[in-house]
Length: 153
Image (cartoon, rainbow, N blue to C red; front, top):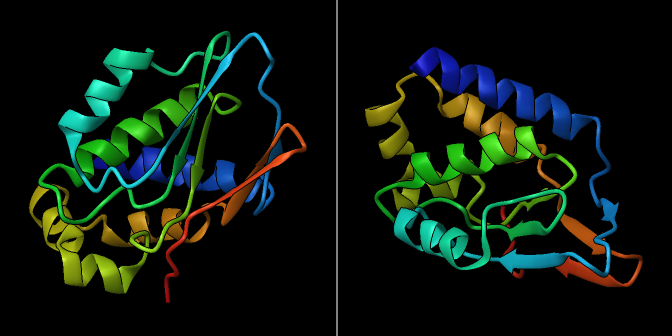
């Protein structure tokens, strides 16, 4: 329901506000880090990645989604809500960086705004509040700097 979407977005936004804008997180040597970029609303691609590498799991598979979650594809809302659900469930195993498509102007130009209006009316600003609080980059194991290459306005 739309109320659930709004509540999840508000919860994840509050979580992100409590974290650094450039988090430094550790992944144990025994675990995997899967870095994923530019899903662009392609639900089948996201599900294939989970099928191939397993879902996020604090005891095994850590994920860093490196921006451009939405726009262009037909299932940006579904992709985004899956990522939000995993971030809320496993905040230490799921990390989200902001890309250039996590931006209101890009969303209006490339289709996410229309998709939100159709699927979850009244929640576009909740998505934008969430996007505006996403980290801009991440550091993994005090060693590897990960940032999306695109710039938002």
